[in-house]
Length: 141
Image 1 (cartoon, rainbow, N blue to C red):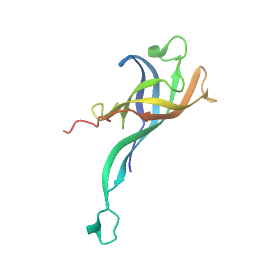
Image 2: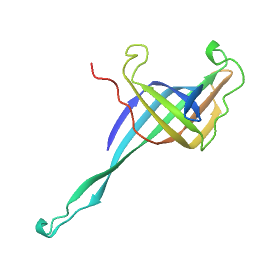
Image 3: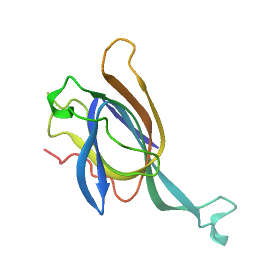
């Protein structure tokens, strides 16, 4: 299992396969990738279990915010809910390394919404996304 973490990113609502509206800025995220294995033990294995690689999958845990003080998010809070299809873009550090990003499409499987005690007009979001399809890693340099 591989884990990748970052401190910047974006979630976009994805309707009909098109990323249409950015819903939240991410302040932290973790992408966990795994691969299933399938039994492939033969009589030649001398009693040892043999496995082959199967399907790959991933999960993204995220936390983010919606801040009315930022010009790019002025208006009503984003409408996101569990079951929503979203496009994920995750950066290690978007300011310093804007080209180092992971991207994926997935379904929000858990979601918590709250407020930030230390700031006014800020909603906080945290949740999990189950990846559907391939994860696009950063392009090699």
